Amino acid sequence: SDVCSSDLADVTFDECFVIHGLKIIDGQKGMFVAMPSRKMPDGEYKDIVHPITPELRKEITDTVIAKYNEAKPEEVVEE
Image 1: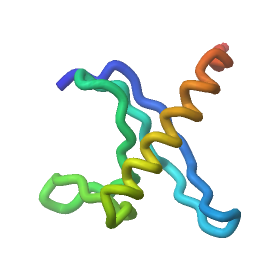
Image 2: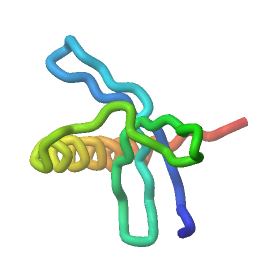
Image 3: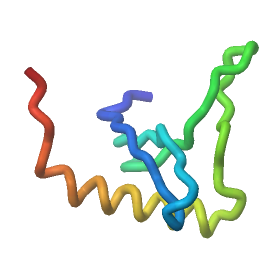
């Protein structure tokens, strides 16, 4: 599947726990957030951190995409 764009995000919980490297992906079915992952010896990618409940996954996804969309007009110009 073609990926239109991919950006990275960090999430901090209660100012005491941070997850770096969430990927914000604009795919064929819309935007979604992929958790940080590691490539396994068999070539498969496996999340190294992830929410256990669907409710927390939805909250993280909704919050990250909302913050991404707020910041989007301030796109960084590469030199």
